[in-house]
Image (cartoon, rainbow, N blue to C red; front, side):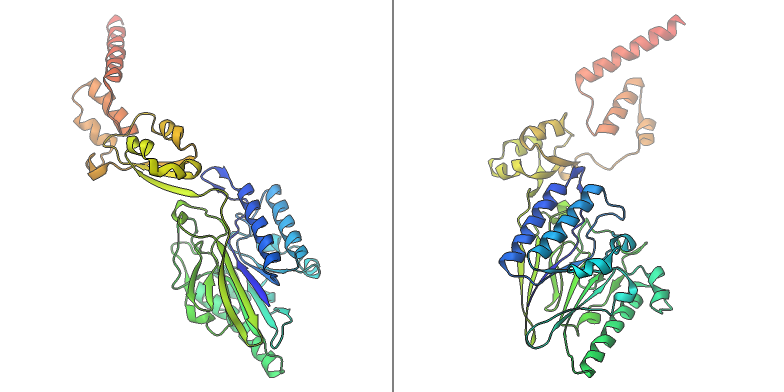
Length: 387
């Protein structure tokens, strides 16, 4: 029995203004190939299949195609909702989809209703915990204190009771749980968004220890919290903080005794990410940066003054520079001042104009710019004198 653990597809998301739908379609191609080549029996999607509650039409079509292709390749799908998904909309038609091998877990009442996959020895029971917003889930789950720990613990308890009932009935199972949450021990990156207003609500790792495997979603870096509790991470990078991460999922193998092995599956991204730092002249000349010419780039310039037309010049070599920052080497510019502080120190009208220009673009006025200011100020004075 083979399962493929994925999460955080975020279909429909953009990357610094660049649409990602084509890159997401590439990832789905790679996933379907993996399902066929590895003879995967079930694909797990641990939340955030969409990037927003109301996805665009093209995004919905992409998911529709993905589900049809995965099931057509011989695997069932178990999809639980995340904090970016609309549980009600994603769960539409769940009873009908189940007949086609797509099992949606978006409702509290389905938490303890597993997808049973027959296997030699013990069958595999897959339980899906949808994202639990504490204020909404507490009442449904009979919890008095609405926080992430309490609602997750209540959901896990329901699953434990179902597993125990099966054991008492002489039908033991290997248990797999999907959940979209922040488990303590995970390492976050910039493109995740907080699960709780005012702070991230973490749940302790030991909540999941007794299950054969827990497939987590929410953090975008693939990581192992314990041998049986892991994040698959997002299938493609969604922030420059993920530039060095290998993207993919986890391939699980079950035998008659339970979980036998877990191995990483990596899918190459359509475009790599490059994080560059240095002086503009050096970046444009450095031969070691040739690979970055085909990458999406985040550039931090360390010139003592912000170079003129910096983005335009960078894009002559790195056409897909998406983010440009300025951090003078050694703090050459000194402490930041507000414009009011600059204005208080100005000695004349020319100083005011040049100070404003420097404030808004982090570069002193060039000689020709000063000459232009002088010409304009003289014309203003002449007009005032004429009045």
